[in-house]
Length: 150
Image 1 (spheres, rainbow, N blue to C red):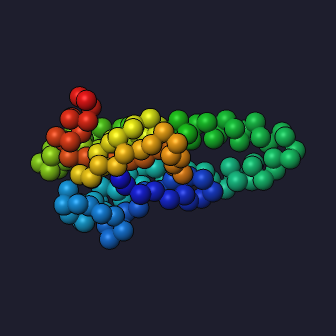
Image 2: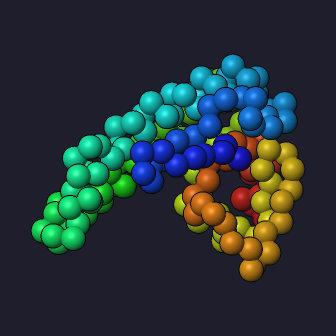
């Protein structure tokens, strides 16, 4: 699982430091850093700006919440499209094909009861709550296909 953190008041950024991630021999630290840094650069386009922060801060007037909500919806949709496109590009790339890897963006990982991430099995119980409702995972292609076909 690629760890993420919140930046800029609610937007996400994926951890690109390979020393803080257990790669499990899937890829080298440099390959991981280049992959995640490219993804983070793409996500900059849909982050909140100073205008969004001002509109939200003026929320008690209620008039500014409508433009903020519209901008927030556009940014959320752009983030979804960018992530889907980036994951597809990485999965189609020769580098991921050579390494035998698959990247997956899960918007509702709590629905998966038992899933294989980075070669280790982690079972989720029904009462388990996640801090993040979304996660980006890198799988071995054979493990991913076996999980999907179950």
